[in-house]
Image (cartoon, rainbow, N blue to C red; front, side, top):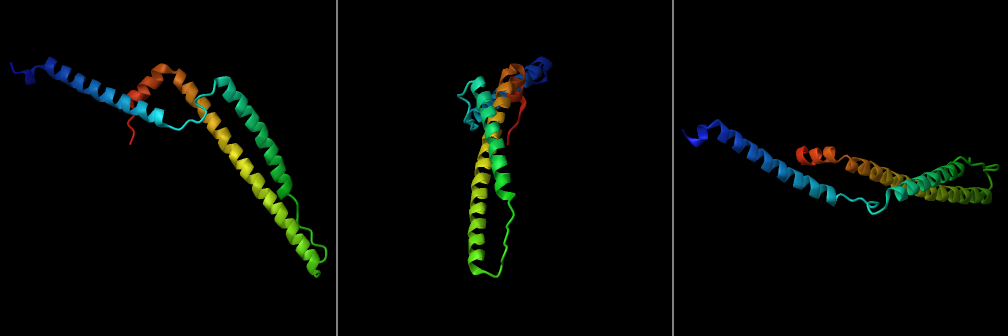
Length: 142
């Protein structure tokens, strides 16, 4: 009987091909995970949680300041006087500049919070060893 017609040989060959493809895919996914930027990877879980709480508090502070800065209305009492118009323009410019600065701080804080939350989610996933193994084995990345 020819080896190619032997069902055991075909089954063994198929299993060997699947095992090889799975090992290759696993290694490829593991390298992709390691290459993923995670700026808080070196921090302990407690440190990540503490940082996240601190940044959430800072976010609330920035949000209140930004709302206070942008909530002011322009109040021009005498539009016919050039000096008052100029002073009002300068005041609005200061408010606008401060609002932009606060919006920048707010955005940076929100990005950091997102990164810290992502790090926490990744750590939870890493603790699920079987699930992580199967994801590495079976996930096909482009």
